[in-house]
Image (cartoon, rainbow, N blue to C red; front, side, top):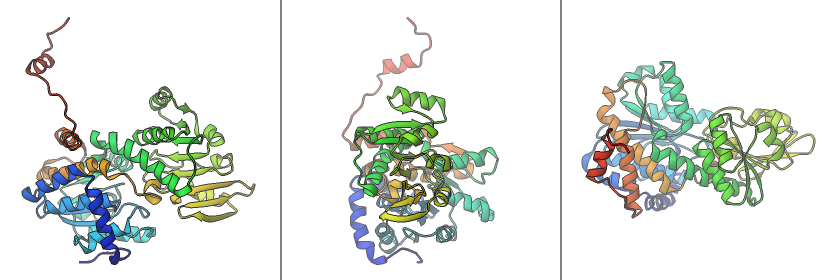
Length: 418
C-alpha cells in the first residue's frame, strides 16, 4: 500500500487521540457496529478529500467496517493532524495522502493519488476532489455512483455547477442536513474558531472589538461565542434578512468599510472572495488581527496585504505580522486558511459525531440508490437526518414526546377550526 504522511512513527500517538475522540462520537460508533454487520458499502471504492483529523479517522473506521475500499487526502494544506494521518495509514491500512503544511502542488498531487484508486463515490470538504474529477478525469464520471459534500463553500460550488448543467453525477449536500449546519456550523465553528484565535494570539477576548463578516450559521456561532467571552461584536452582511436578524439578536451591524476603522479582530465566514481587501487594510487600527474560517484562503486579499507591507515576519507559530510603511502592524492568522484547523484542532468530536454520521449513512444511501438518481444536488434524505437526531438525543440521555393518535388525526384533518 502507498501513502504519504509526515512520519509513520506518529501512529501510536495518533491512535490514542483517535480513540479519545471516538469516545465522544457515540452516534457514529453505533453506525459502525451496524455497518460491520450489514456491509452496505461492500466492495465500493470511496475516495475522500476531507480534513484529516482524529474525528475523520473515526469516520474512516466506520466506512471501512461497512466494506468500503478507501483512499483519503487532505482538503486543506494546513488542516491535517499528522499523527492521525499516520495511524490511518499504518494501523488501519488506508492509502492516506496528507501532510500538514504541504504546498499547493503536493496538495493536488495527493488528490490525484486518491483518484488513482478509482473511486465510485467521492466524499468532499470543499469540492476539490469532485471538481478535479470533472476537469481532468471525465472518463471516470460514468462509473461514479455519486458524491457527498461536507461544507457550505463546497455546496456553493456544486449549485453553481448544477445551474450550468455541469454535474457529471448526483451529489448529496451533507452540509445542508439540519443535524449538520444547525449544529456543526454554529456550535462547532463557533467554538473552534474562537479557540484557534486564542491559541494563535493569546489575546483577552473581554472588551475586544470583534468583527464577524458573514452571518450564516458559522457566523452566528462565532458571534455567539465571542460575545459570550465578553467581546463587543459587530456583524457585516450583504443579505438584508441576515443583517436584520443580527440587529435583532443584539449585535452592531455595519458595512465592512466602517467596521475596518472600528474593529480589533476580524473573522471572515462568507464563502466568497476579497471580503477584506486593500481599502480596508488601509484604515485598520495598529495591531488588528485578521483571520478566516471560510473554507478557502481567498476571503482575505492576502496578495494585496503582502504588496502593502514593507516587511513580514512570523511572530507566533500561526501569526504573521505585516508591517506597513506608516508603522501600523496587521496580524494574519493561519496564513488566511481555516483558523480553527490551522491554529487549533477543529470542531469538537461530539459535534462531528452528527456530521460524520450523516456522511456514513448517505454513503450507504448512494451505494444503494446512486445509479437511479439524476445528475443534480440533493438534500440529505429526511429520514436519515431525523434518525441522526434521534440517535444523538439517545446518546445524551434525552427523551422526547411522541404524538398521540388524536394529535396525529388533528394534524391530518383540515376541517377542524375554532
